[in-house]
Amino acid sequence: MLKVENKDAEHFLALLEQRVAELQEISHYPKNNPDEINFDDYSKFREMMAECLSFMVIIERRIGLQGEGQKQRLLEQFETLTAAVWSILLDGALGYLTVICERDHLPLGSEHVFVQELKTLHDAEKILGEGRYEKHLVSAAMEQRAKAEEILNMVIDRVPEMLNLD
Image (cartoon, rainbow, N blue to C red):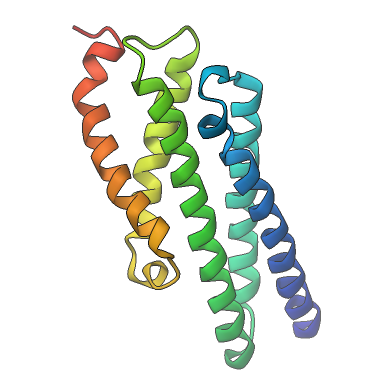
């Protein structure tokens, strides 16, 4: 049974790596098309994000069932992919929030996007700040974390005005 689970863990990590590449591509939409934010494109981003995060739970469980020798190697690969997923989510959330924050008021339907991406930004910053993931971050992701904190503070300051809570 352990051999099957080991192959499953390795296979799942390879599949996650493919999904990460797809997520990366989808996450660039707001930066490349800031005037064309489309809820369908945003939904694709969120669906791929949910798929990756759910898949990560399954993979982490499979890795936990491994013997120590295999576990460490698989865990290292898993942590690298986890850092990549959260870096991409951070980048995508920043893209959507940046486009939204440039507007005086939230366009119809974008309040949902705003709230979701604010949470994603917060979650990504929290996860990427964990020591076990920091070592897997490239310098661009480190810069994104600093930018995320800045935007998060700016957005939190503007929330009442953007959501018409005044």
